[in-house]
Length: 216
Image (tube, rainbow, N blue to C red; front, side):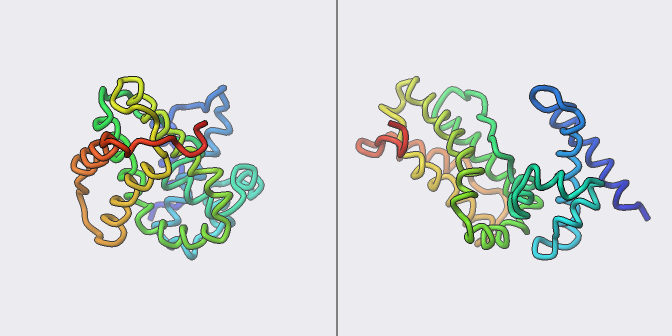
């Protein structure tokens, strides 16, 4: 039987290859701790589920002290979300040449981030997050909306939209179908092309593109 620590070491090596050996500014030791925490969290979610996962267990599996976790995350919820969905920043997809193509790339990223370990963790995670939604919005939702604002800004630059629309509305239009498909209907292969086309067409309708909240 392979020891859990050995599995974690292998996952860390794979994550280091996937995300690069250092973080921005070059901090290989810190980067390795980050990847160890991600790997340990994903392993324990698969083994015990979200409800039984503890910060102590993640620290032990990752081979780090709890202080290393609390320097990065204030709560278990932040740790889990960062490990299975995305971190504080969200990478803007490359310019695909049109609003619809850019939205399709965003939708594919959303589906990927909410699949795998996130499928079992998200329901309990969101229930816990509702206790302090303001902090969660400040840390994670802000990153998602910054990504969307950049994508919508490209559409304005191309002349596809007169101005950046309300990002809250666009965010909901993209996330809503994915959540229903994956967590309520529990279906596979979501029709992201259809959704991207629908949202892009809706945003181009007269009167549907208004100033983004907080964009002034």
